[in-house]
Image: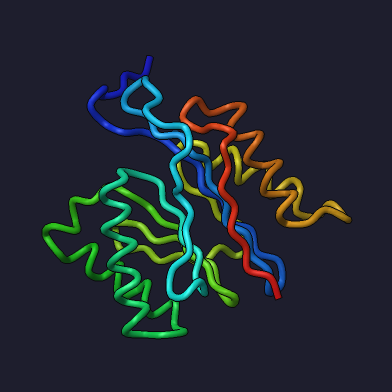
Length: 184
């Protein structure tokens, strides 16, 4: 049996799907402390950099807000260069003794690229345009990959269906979804 520390926050699911120049980032709203749901409508997906970037986080809330602020600062220094801003953030995150302790992961996307950023210094671009993080991430990722080739279904519909599956399976993910998209 898996035992969770009841003083730590757990779980969420963030999913990003890209097709051509269109991208969707979707996240659930559940915040859990140990085995207890503390909040069901948290906003873990938001817009940055004058609405040109979408970011979603999984992990400790205060840590995520710190990372959002840092990423926004990097985007201000490197406008229109999401990859460079993310690499600079990952360097800081890995090297700075304060930031190194942050427990979170992020998915970020703009009109050109989608990336996963981790505290270990990784900045990863998914090969197929689909990425997911958090406790229900693998469920959402699997569902999205299964649906991506179905004709006549939009990436927004795929994202919603995949998140429903994740929320049905993962106890740390709920059905209160926030979705942001960039369409061309």
